[in-house]
Image (cartoon, rainbow, N blue to C red; front, side, top):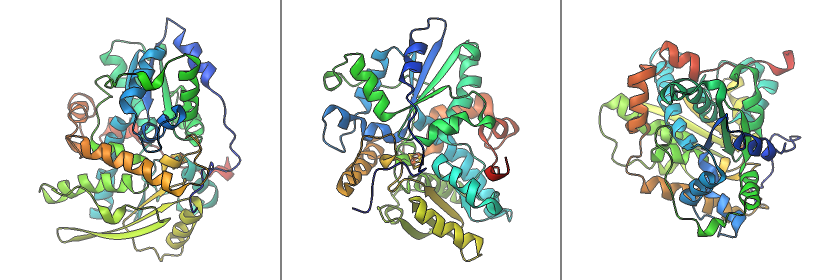
Amino acid sequence: GQCVSVCPTGALTEVNNTSKVWNALNDDSKFVIVQTAPAVRAALGEEFGNECGTPVTGKMVAALRSLGFDRVLDTDFAADLTIMEEATELMDRIQNGGRLPMLTSCCPGWINFFEREFTDLLDVPSSCKSPQQMFGAIAKSYYAKKMNIDPKNMIVVSVMPCLAKKYEAAREEMGNDVDIVISTRELAKMVKEAGIHFNSLHDEEFDSFLGESTGAGVIFGVTGGVMEAALRTAYEWITNETLDDVEFSMLRGMDGIREATIQIKDMQVKAAIASGLGNARKLLEKIRSGEADYQIIEIMACPGGCIDGGGQPYLHGHYEKLEKRANALYQEDRNKPLRKSHQNPAIIQLYDEFLDKPNSEIAHKLLHTHYTCRECD
Ligand code: SF4
Protein backbone atom coordinates (compact mmCIF):
# COMPACT_ATOMS: atom_id res chain seq x y z
CA GLY A 1 0.00 0.00 0.00
CA GLN A 2 1.08 3.60 -0.29
CA CYS A 3 0.87 4.23 3.46
CA VAL A 4 3.07 2.49 5.91
CA SER A 5 3.14 2.87 9.64
CA VAL A 6 6.67 3.88 10.36
CA CYS A 7 8.06 6.72 12.37
CA PRO A 8 8.86 9.35 9.75
CA THR A 9 11.56 10.83 11.89
CA GLY A 10 13.67 7.83 11.04
CA ALA A 11 16.06 6.77 13.69
CA LEU A 12 13.85 7.65 16.64
CA THR A 13 13.39 4.75 18.94
CA GLU A 14 10.57 4.83 21.39
CA VAL A 15 11.42 5.82 24.93
CA ASN A 16 9.15 3.97 27.34
CA ASN A 17 7.60 6.49 29.71
CA THR A 18 4.90 4.41 31.37
CA SER A 19 6.85 3.98 34.61
CA LYS A 20 7.21 7.76 34.87
CA VAL A 21 3.44 8.10 34.57
CA TRP A 22 2.84 5.41 37.21
CA ASN A 23 5.22 7.22 39.58
CA ALA A 24 3.39 10.50 39.04
CA LEU A 25 0.01 8.89 39.63
CA ASN A 26 1.29 7.32 42.85
CA ASP A 27 2.62 10.61 44.19
CA ASP A 28 -0.13 12.19 46.30
CA SER A 29 1.62 15.57 46.36
CA LYS A 30 1.11 15.95 42.59
CA PHE A 31 -1.94 17.02 40.65
CA VAL A 32 -1.70 14.94 37.50
CA ILE A 33 -3.66 15.92 34.42
CA VAL A 34 -3.76 14.20 31.07
CA GLN A 35 -4.46 15.45 27.54
CA THR A 36 -5.26 13.18 24.61
CA ALA A 37 -4.44 14.02 21.00
CA PRO A 38 -7.21 13.81 18.38
CA ALA A 39 -5.86 10.73 16.61
CA VAL A 40 -5.56 8.58 19.73
CA ARG A 41 -9.33 8.01 20.04
CA ALA A 42 -9.50 6.73 16.47
CA ALA A 43 -7.01 3.91 17.05
CA LEU A 44 -6.75 3.02 20.76
CA GLY A 45 -9.67 0.59 20.46
CA GLU A 46 -7.64 -1.60 18.09
CA GLU A 47 -5.34 -2.52 20.98
CA PHE A 48 -8.37 -4.11 22.65
CA GLY A 49 -9.57 -6.06 19.64
CA ASN A 50 -12.00 -3.49 18.23
CA GLU A 51 -12.45 -3.04 14.50
CA CYS A 52 -10.18 -0.46 12.96
CA GLY A 53 -12.03 2.86 12.81
CA THR A 54 -14.04 2.33 16.01
CA PRO A 55 -13.97 5.64 17.87
CA VAL A 56 -13.46 4.98 21.58
CA THR A 57 -13.42 8.50 22.99
CA GLY A 58 -15.81 7.86 25.90
CA LYS A 59 -14.11 4.61 26.93
CA MET A 60 -10.68 6.23 26.67
CA VAL A 61 -11.81 8.98 29.06
CA ALA A 62 -13.23 6.38 31.46
CA ALA A 63 -10.00 4.36 31.33
CA LEU A 64 -7.85 7.42 32.05
CA ARG A 65 -10.04 8.28 35.03
CA SER A 66 -9.73 4.72 36.34
CA LEU A 67 -5.96 4.95 36.03
CA GLY A 68 -6.13 7.79 38.56
CA PHE A 69 -5.58 11.01 36.64
CA ASP A 70 -6.91 13.99 38.59
CA ARG A 71 -8.37 15.54 35.46
CA VAL A 72 -8.94 14.06 32.01
CA LEU A 73 -8.62 16.81 29.43
CA ASP A 74 -8.34 17.11 25.70
CA THR A 75 -5.67 18.26 23.25
CA ASP A 76 -8.63 18.98 20.95
CA PHE A 77 -9.33 22.03 23.14
CA ALA A 78 -5.84 23.25 22.36
CA ALA A 79 -6.35 22.44 18.68
CA ASP A 80 -9.22 24.93 18.73
CA LEU A 81 -6.90 27.39 20.43
CA THR A 82 -4.26 26.78 17.77
CA ILE A 83 -6.79 27.71 15.10
CA MET A 84 -7.56 31.01 16.84
CA GLU A 85 -3.88 31.92 16.75
CA GLU A 86 -3.02 30.39 13.38
CA ALA A 87 -6.01 31.81 11.47
CA THR A 88 -5.15 35.23 12.91
CA GLU A 89 -1.54 34.85 11.79
CA LEU A 90 -2.60 33.75 8.31
CA MET A 91 -4.97 36.69 7.89
CA ASP A 92 -2.30 39.05 9.14
CA ARG A 93 0.28 37.70 6.68
CA ILE A 94 -2.18 37.91 3.76
CA GLN A 95 -3.51 41.36 4.60
CA ASN A 96 -0.23 42.96 5.64
CA GLY A 97 2.16 41.55 3.08
CA GLY A 98 3.79 39.02 5.39
CA ARG A 99 5.75 35.93 4.39
CA LEU A 100 3.71 33.54 2.26
CA PRO A 101 3.00 30.71 2.04
CA MET A 102 2.51 30.09 5.73
CA LEU A 103 3.21 26.54 6.80
CA THR A 104 1.35 24.87 9.62
CA SER A 105 3.48 23.97 12.59
CA CYS A 106 1.61 21.29 14.57
CA CYS A 107 3.83 18.41 13.53
CA PRO A 108 7.23 18.19 15.25
CA GLY A 109 8.19 15.33 12.92
CA TRP A 110 8.34 17.74 10.02
CA ILE A 111 9.60 20.70 12.05
CA ASN A 112 12.63 18.64 13.11
CA PHE A 113 13.29 17.68 9.50
CA PHE A 114 12.81 21.23 8.28
CA GLU A 115 15.15 22.77 10.86
CA ARG A 116 17.94 20.58 9.52
CA GLU A 117 17.32 20.71 5.80
CA PHE A 118 15.55 23.96 5.01
CA THR A 119 17.30 26.43 7.26
CA ASP A 120 16.92 29.21 4.70
CA LEU A 121 13.14 29.07 5.21
CA LEU A 122 12.91 29.51 8.98
CA ASP A 123 10.39 32.36 8.68
CA VAL A 124 7.92 30.30 6.69
CA PRO A 125 6.20 28.13 9.32
CA SER A 126 3.55 29.63 11.52
CA SER A 127 4.97 30.75 14.85
CA CYS A 128 2.16 28.87 16.61
CA LYS A 129 3.17 26.16 19.02
CA SER A 130 1.54 22.80 18.45
CA PRO A 131 -1.68 21.95 20.32
CA GLN A 132 0.26 19.71 22.73
CA GLN A 133 2.47 22.64 23.75
CA MET A 134 -0.33 25.21 23.80
CA PHE A 135 -2.22 22.91 26.14
CA GLY A 136 0.78 22.66 28.46
CA ALA A 137 1.35 26.41 28.46
CA ILE A 138 -2.29 27.16 29.37
CA ALA A 139 -2.42 24.33 31.91
CA LYS A 140 0.58 25.63 33.84
CA SER A 141 -0.56 29.26 33.79
CA TYR A 142 -4.25 30.05 33.56
CA TYR A 143 -5.61 26.63 34.52
CA ALA A 144 -3.27 26.20 37.50
CA LYS A 145 -4.36 29.58 38.80
CA LYS A 146 -8.02 28.80 38.26
CA MET A 147 -7.62 25.49 40.11
CA ASN A 148 -5.54 27.14 42.81
CA ILE A 149 -2.61 24.78 42.25
CA ASP A 150 1.07 25.64 42.27
CA PRO A 151 2.24 24.75 38.73
CA LYS A 152 5.27 23.11 40.35
CA ASN A 153 2.91 20.51 41.79
CA MET A 154 1.13 19.94 38.51
CA ILE A 155 2.20 17.20 36.15
CA VAL A 156 0.96 17.38 32.56
CA VAL A 157 0.89 14.03 30.77
CA SER A 158 0.15 13.80 27.04
CA VAL A 159 -1.10 10.78 25.18
CA MET A 160 0.09 11.18 21.61
CA PRO A 161 -0.01 9.14 18.39
CA CYS A 162 3.52 10.27 17.83
CA LEU A 163 7.09 9.61 18.83
CA ALA A 164 8.35 13.06 17.81
CA LYS A 165 6.04 14.64 20.42
CA LYS A 166 8.36 13.28 23.11
CA TYR A 167 11.19 15.25 21.59
CA GLU A 168 9.03 18.31 21.09
CA ALA A 169 8.08 18.43 24.78
CA ALA A 170 11.78 18.26 25.65
CA ARG A 171 12.80 21.23 23.48
CA GLU A 172 14.35 23.88 25.64
CA GLU A 173 12.16 26.74 24.44
CA MET A 174 9.05 24.79 25.48
CA GLY A 175 9.99 24.98 29.16
CA ASN A 176 8.48 22.26 31.34
CA ASP A 177 4.94 22.75 30.17
CA VAL A 178 4.45 19.12 29.20
CA ASP A 179 6.13 16.76 31.66
CA ILE A 180 5.59 13.28 30.26
CA VAL A 181 4.52 12.06 26.83
CA ILE A 182 3.25 8.55 26.21
CA SER A 183 2.14 6.99 22.95
CA THR A 184 -1.23 5.42 22.17
CA ARG A 185 0.42 2.00 22.51
CA GLU A 186 1.88 2.91 25.91
CA LEU A 187 -1.55 4.00 27.13
CA ALA A 188 -2.97 0.65 26.02
CA LYS A 189 -0.18 -1.07 27.94
CA MET A 190 -1.00 0.87 31.11
CA VAL A 191 -4.71 0.06 30.81
CA LYS A 192 -3.81 -3.63 30.49
CA GLU A 193 -1.35 -3.45 33.40
CA ALA A 194 -4.09 -1.92 35.57
CA GLY A 195 -6.40 -4.82 34.73
CA ILE A 196 -9.06 -2.49 33.34
CA HIS A 197 -11.50 -4.28 31.06
CA PHE A 198 -11.55 -1.59 28.39
CA ASN A 199 -14.46 -2.82 26.29
CA SER A 200 -16.80 -3.01 29.30
CA LEU A 201 -16.22 0.60 30.32
CA HIS A 202 -19.12 3.02 30.03
CA ASP A 203 -18.54 6.16 28.02
CA GLU A 204 -17.53 9.16 30.08
CA GLU A 205 -17.03 12.84 29.25
CA PHE A 206 -13.85 14.90 29.47
CA ASP A 207 -13.59 17.20 32.47
CA SER A 208 -14.62 20.72 31.80
CA PHE A 209 -12.24 23.53 31.03
CA LEU A 210 -9.50 22.37 28.70
CA GLY A 211 -11.81 19.45 27.94
CA GLU A 212 -14.27 21.05 25.52
CA SER A 213 -13.70 21.02 21.81
CA THR A 214 -15.41 21.56 18.49
CA GLY A 215 -15.39 19.27 15.48
CA ALA A 216 -12.63 21.41 14.01
CA GLY A 217 -10.30 20.32 16.81
CA VAL A 218 -11.10 16.65 16.21
CA ILE A 219 -10.05 16.59 12.54
CA PHE A 220 -6.51 17.76 13.37
CA GLY A 221 -5.66 14.06 13.51
CA VAL A 222 -6.06 13.48 9.79
CA THR A 223 -4.13 14.98 6.88
CA GLY A 224 -5.81 18.19 5.70
CA GLY A 225 -7.64 18.63 8.99
CA VAL A 226 -5.65 21.57 10.33
CA MET A 227 -6.14 23.40 7.04
CA GLU A 228 -9.87 22.66 7.01
CA ALA A 229 -10.25 23.80 10.61
CA ALA A 230 -8.33 27.02 9.92
CA LEU A 231 -10.43 27.80 6.85
CA ARG A 232 -13.72 27.28 8.71
CA THR A 233 -12.68 30.06 11.06
CA ALA A 234 -10.88 32.32 8.56
CA TYR A 235 -13.91 32.19 6.26
CA GLU A 236 -16.26 33.52 8.94
CA TRP A 237 -13.78 36.11 10.17
CA ILE A 238 -13.08 37.46 6.70
CA THR A 239 -16.66 37.47 5.39
CA ASN A 240 -18.64 38.07 8.59
CA GLU A 241 -21.01 35.47 7.20
CA THR A 242 -21.98 32.06 8.47
CA LEU A 243 -20.25 29.17 6.73
CA ASP A 244 -23.05 26.60 6.34
CA ASP A 245 -21.21 23.80 4.60
CA VAL A 246 -18.22 23.26 6.87
CA GLU A 247 -16.84 20.21 5.07
CA PHE A 248 -14.13 21.15 2.60
CA SER A 249 -14.17 17.91 0.63
CA MET A 250 -11.49 19.21 -1.76
CA LEU A 251 -9.02 19.19 1.13
CA ARG A 252 -9.73 15.59 2.10
CA GLY A 253 -8.30 12.33 0.84
CA MET A 254 -5.15 10.31 1.19
CA ASP A 255 -3.08 11.46 -1.79
CA GLY A 256 0.35 12.52 -0.56
CA ILE A 257 0.14 16.00 -2.10
CA ARG A 258 -3.15 17.82 -2.68
CA GLU A 259 -3.91 21.33 -3.89
CA ALA A 260 -7.07 23.40 -3.79
CA THR A 261 -8.18 26.98 -4.32
CA ILE A 262 -10.77 28.19 -1.84
CA GLN A 263 -12.86 31.19 -2.73
CA ILE A 264 -13.50 33.43 0.26
CA LYS A 265 -15.57 36.34 -1.07
CA ASP A 266 -13.30 38.07 -3.57
CA MET A 267 -10.20 36.41 -2.18
CA GLN A 268 -8.75 33.20 -3.55
CA VAL A 269 -6.84 31.20 -0.99
CA LYS A 270 -4.48 28.76 -2.64
CA ALA A 271 -3.77 25.81 -0.40
CA ALA A 272 -1.52 22.77 -0.56
CA ILE A 273 -1.37 19.76 1.72
CA ALA A 274 1.44 17.26 2.00
CA SER A 275 1.72 14.19 4.15
CA GLY A 276 4.84 12.09 4.33
CA LEU A 277 8.29 13.65 4.44
CA GLY A 278 9.10 12.89 0.79
CA ASN A 279 6.07 14.91 -0.26
CA ALA A 280 6.92 17.66 2.22
CA ARG A 281 10.36 17.91 0.65
CA LYS A 282 8.84 18.39 -2.81
CA LEU A 283 6.68 21.28 -1.60
CA LEU A 284 9.50 22.88 0.38
CA GLU A 285 11.76 22.76 -2.66
CA LYS A 286 9.06 24.53 -4.66
CA ILE A 287 8.94 27.26 -2.00
CA ARG A 288 12.72 27.55 -2.03
CA SER A 289 12.81 28.00 -5.79
CA GLY A 290 9.95 30.51 -5.71
CA GLU A 291 7.61 28.27 -7.72
CA ALA A 292 5.10 27.72 -4.92
CA ASP A 293 2.15 29.99 -5.45
CA TYR A 294 0.25 29.15 -2.26
CA GLN A 295 -0.91 31.11 0.76
CA ILE A 296 -1.08 28.20 3.14
CA ILE A 297 0.48 24.77 3.28
CA GLU A 298 -0.19 22.01 5.75
CA ILE A 299 2.50 19.42 6.30
CA MET A 300 2.27 16.23 8.32
CA ALA A 301 5.27 13.94 8.48
CA CYS A 302 3.23 10.74 8.64
CA PRO A 303 1.43 9.56 5.51
CA GLY A 304 -2.25 10.24 6.20
CA GLY A 305 -1.48 12.45 9.20
CA CYS A 306 -1.38 11.60 12.90
CA ILE A 307 -3.86 8.72 12.58
CA ASP A 308 -0.86 6.85 11.15
CA GLY A 309 1.64 8.16 13.70
CA GLY A 310 4.57 6.12 14.95
CA GLY A 311 2.96 5.76 18.40
CA GLN A 312 -0.29 4.27 17.12
CA PRO A 313 -1.15 0.57 16.90
CA TYR A 314 0.71 -0.76 13.86
CA LEU A 315 -1.18 -0.72 10.57
CA HIS A 316 1.37 -2.75 8.62
CA GLY A 317 0.70 -0.67 5.52
CA HIS A 318 -3.05 -1.33 5.33
CA TYR A 319 -4.34 1.64 3.43
CA GLU A 320 -8.05 0.82 3.98
CA LYS A 321 -7.49 0.82 7.72
CA LEU A 322 -6.04 4.29 7.53
CA GLU A 323 -9.19 5.50 5.81
CA LYS A 324 -11.29 3.91 8.52
CA ARG A 325 -9.40 5.82 11.18
CA ALA A 326 -9.88 9.02 9.17
CA ASN A 327 -13.60 8.33 8.94
CA ALA A 328 -13.78 7.82 12.70
CA LEU A 329 -12.55 11.41 13.14
CA TYR A 330 -14.77 12.83 10.39
CA GLN A 331 -17.75 11.12 12.03
CA GLU A 332 -16.85 12.54 15.43
CA ASP A 333 -16.65 15.99 13.84
CA ARG A 334 -20.13 15.51 12.35
CA ASN A 335 -21.53 14.51 15.74
CA LYS A 336 -20.30 17.65 17.47
CA PRO A 337 -22.84 20.41 18.00
CA LEU A 338 -20.15 23.03 17.29
CA ARG A 339 -17.74 22.55 14.39
CA LYS A 340 -15.80 25.81 14.25
CA SER A 341 -13.00 26.53 16.70
CA HIS A 342 -13.95 30.15 17.37
CA GLN A 343 -17.37 28.97 18.63
CA ASN A 344 -15.88 26.88 21.46
CA PRO A 345 -17.34 28.54 24.61
CA ALA A 346 -14.34 27.57 26.72
CA ILE A 347 -12.01 29.18 24.17
CA ILE A 348 -14.10 32.36 24.20
CA GLN A 349 -13.91 32.36 28.00
CA LEU A 350 -10.14 31.82 27.93
CA TYR A 351 -9.66 34.93 25.78
CA ASP A 352 -12.15 36.93 27.87
CA GLU A 353 -10.53 36.08 31.16
CA PHE A 354 -6.89 35.72 30.29
CA LEU A 355 -5.53 35.98 26.78
CA ASP A 356 -7.50 39.03 25.63
CA LYS A 357 -7.26 38.38 21.90
CA PRO A 358 -5.30 36.19 19.48
CA ASN A 359 -1.66 37.20 19.27
CA SER A 360 -1.97 39.59 22.23
CA GLU A 361 1.25 40.06 24.15
CA ILE A 362 0.47 37.26 26.58
CA ALA A 363 -0.86 34.96 23.82
CA HIS A 364 2.34 35.56 21.90
CA LYS A 365 4.49 34.77 24.91
CA LEU A 366 2.64 31.58 25.86
CA LEU A 367 1.44 30.17 22.56
CA HIS A 368 4.08 31.04 19.98
CA THR A 369 7.60 29.84 19.36
CA HIS A 370 10.49 30.25 16.93
CA TYR A 371 12.60 27.92 14.81
CA THR A 372 16.32 27.37 14.85
CA CYS A 373 18.89 25.91 12.55
CA ARG A 374 19.59 22.65 14.33
CA GLU A 375 22.83 22.08 12.47
CA CYS A 376 24.11 25.35 13.95
CA ASP A 377 23.47 24.38 17.63
FE1 SF4 B 1 3.64 13.12 15.00
FE2 SF4 B 1 1.38 13.57 13.68
FE3 SF4 B 1 3.65 14.61 12.84
FE4 SF4 B 1 3.27 12.01 12.64
S1 SF4 B 1 2.08 13.59 11.56
S2 SF4 B 1 5.14 13.01 13.35
S3 SF4 B 1 2.06 11.60 14.48
S4 SF4 B 1 2.62 15.09 14.76
